Length: 494
Ligand SMILES: *Cc1c(COP(=O)(O)O)cnc(C)c1O
Image 1: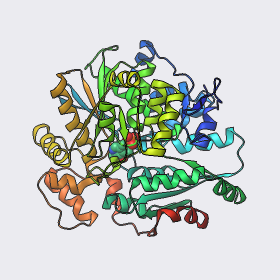
Image 2: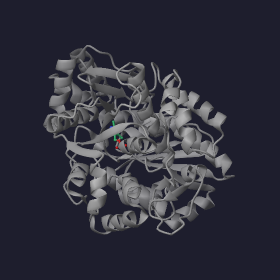
Image 3: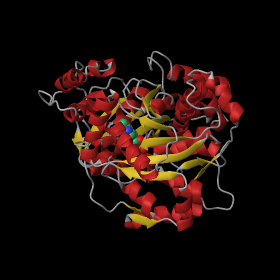
């Protein structure tokens, strides 16, 4: 299977292999790579997956997209990425919450957030892609993060041969625990740097470096090239398709549904990568009725789905769900491409970069609204949802997951839709323990991560995950803070 840019409007678009797409990250015309066709599955495919463990489900689904990879090699990578040692208790466990709702817990990996699901395997895919494409230069991974990607990428890439990684994060845009996790990162090939500004400033800085021919030459002279680990890379997106299949299989396993029944997914959304993977699963033939796109007060996607106008020229809010504090949802470009093709996509993206907004054609919006429902939660609603779910269901959720639960309740109330719904849970509550603890009525003794974890342990009578407890005692390694304008210079110096 081959991949093309979402902005390639030629009658026969240039196509690259999946190894090439994963190596490059972004297409030369700044579009995102998409498969030229979507593989279709049938009931038998799902039935076959039902009895398999997660890593085998992953190998089955990934091999449909990464057709140039050796099947045994993929199986080995999946086994190494999703084993018990990295995901104790299983990679993507599904919990029943009651009343036809389920929580898909994607945070049992090394950094306690869902980005591990992709970033534990992506470095292995890239490493193989370098060999498969005969690459002799080193890959320099550049990451802009609103918190979780950075740590997950650092853990995934640390000490991987042939790769260096530099992570930029908005200086006041991540939680104390996220900051602590990144600034204590181990590994000989890692760099972490804070940027003054918000996530979009950091992401725009990284995008500008990718597009800068001079930077490419400077890198070439030093015998490396730039690559991305952000969710714009196909190697990030493909592994995320797997857990939608896995959740569906677990519902079948548990006797909650039979193969062929429809389910809904509700996904807390920022860059639109996670929910877009669900859309691909649906295009492949997984029986999914609706996708509920849940946003926080940065509700640019809710407005888009409802009005057809994507408008990033608005106030940016720092919220208690910082990994969703985004005004440019990069992967929405892939949805436009899937729904409308490259012509419409490139026009919209041109308008977005020139005016900060665009209106998608009405027929395209009708198609999108046939699948997606957009809902958002205010800060108050998010915190109230944490309390409600804990008190009524005895289930402890983080702030991002709370946006999804809150949005789901609004959706169910508005539509009366009682299709079984899987709510995607994207972070351990302990990763955002301060706000979760406050939501449950307990104020931590200080802003120190140790006090914050203790506070949540006490109020919820649960215990913090080991990987988070371990970071408390590790020394700080990375303390640089720079302006967005100095990002390129920083990369050349480090
Ligand atoms: C990244 C992230 C999200 C948003 O996922 P997207 O793929 O960017 O839409 C939601 N919750 C958490 C905890 C995250 O880290």
